[in-house]
Length: 494
Image 1 (cartoon, helix red, strand yellow):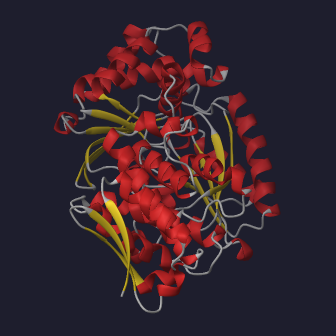
Image 2 (cartoon, rainbow, N blue to C red):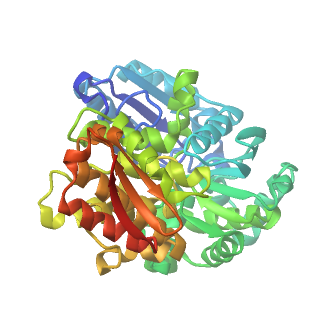
């Protein structure tokens, strides 16, 4: 949701790749840029690279048509900041410079052709700014190349670009020849084994399409590709299965466009080869990559240091909450802290995020606030959060709006969370409900009260300025909260 929509400080990224030409318009140069327009055309500029070393003639025509449209959209949206980047196809093709010159002459767009090392760096930044990349390997599979980046403690240790994108693999005769080509290139990246036991972070259109296919085939309860996670063994088995399928079989299985399915077999083979060599503990798919990395790379250091999840939720709060008092959401999170003694720092980060989103459903009809808040939060375009975290935020706010957490409507979250996670989300929701009933949503009033949890009681202490806020509805809400925690409840005036 745009944080500064009135000023129209949008930024456009035009990404000219070997497979597709894509225009993404974001809501501004900020820590968590949200897409307001996302459009691509599968032009296959690099389809002939493996055979001729030149751009595909039909792809050039299609790309020019797409860029003409995108240039018109950029002008109509009055976007001042445009980042136009090109990757493997234009940097490797003999006629790449001619294409670039033609685009600049016709549309006034200055294209930045990035080399493999820079592509790998920006892709890595795009993954790490999304809260990923603590230890392991990042892989970005495209039409012309495969970028591999070894990361430790959110720092790039090694990076390399290999010429084994889908178009180059299609130039090989069969799967056996494709495997030989991939393995020969992977042998040049001797740092891959250093990621063993860590995570493999997968991005690129074809690998993301594989994640969507796995979500559909396994009926995973949350249909969100970002940070979808498999064990290394699960991912390898799936990649090997997909690599063995024909295009016709994949069309029936994957439920994707024909153009995307045509690349999936080669992409699956490449992924299988990487996983066999690396042996990761988990494979995590990332929705962010080079484009988001390019924006993050241009931000001031102070902005870069902002927590991705908190910045995302704060942006939502600034846009849709009733009162111009975002700081009070953080105060509510601190107010709830006594209910969660012994929890780790990661939990309190999620608690603060849940509080920032707690005014999400105020404008809905009362009968639908809980359900609509749950569904909206579960699918919001948030950064820095995995599926378990999304389920916690959604379930906590479902309960905050009057749900019990055990209704059938909340089954998506209950399938993802552990029993402990469900309990923590329900307690957070019940605690937020007490806070909202006590203050009527003017959360600054929490300053005159505090929660305490003893071995056998949950106590709401009301100071002199807050004593007048006490009502029977507060007693009922406190009773629900205390029962969930296995304790009695008490409201104490001080």
